[in-house]
Image (cartoon, rainbow, N blue to C red; front, top):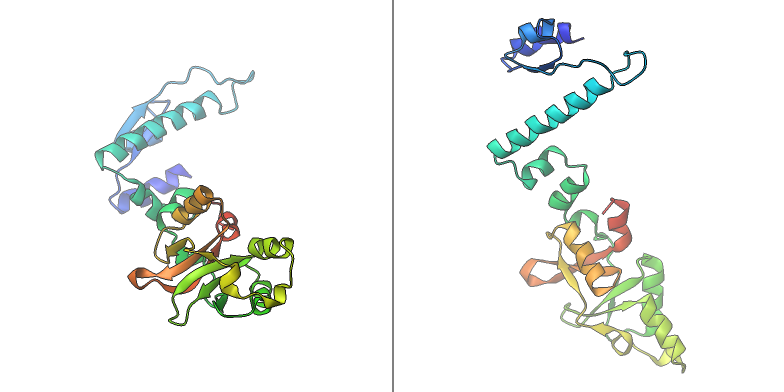
Length: 218
């Protein structure tokens, strides 16, 4: 395969750097630079299976790659562009808006009865809903945990309203923030949802759940 590839590589004016164990090999003769790595013997008893040779090639290849990274000042952002599907790529490129539930955001108003809150949380299946005031501003969040604590306190829950159950000043995150930052916030505050907002206006857009992040491998 290498014999067939070399003419194609040279036709595109690419530089060939070869790692060889024989200085007079076809690859060594046709490479622009040949790194000679003698292999006296493979590790297997028959001296047939590529073992020592493969380890040496991998080590030298890694060393060359690291040298090139330093020479070109290769940064994390460059790695992310070339490997968008990898973990580093996702942490550096994927935003909250890419993963959040923005199409049908769970929403109630501070004066809504608790029965409406229960229906909204159950139907959207995100374990929480944002609470807005009359000016459409976020004023709180109600989670399924808040509902359980309300029931544990006793009394007629049907007389309760959203503003009596909600947690004020909820944790919010901008839709353009990196998704990895959302996970860091959740872990720091021991929560599983964040309300997603739009820039400096802080207009409510939706919810991102920790499961959205875990599904992507964060």
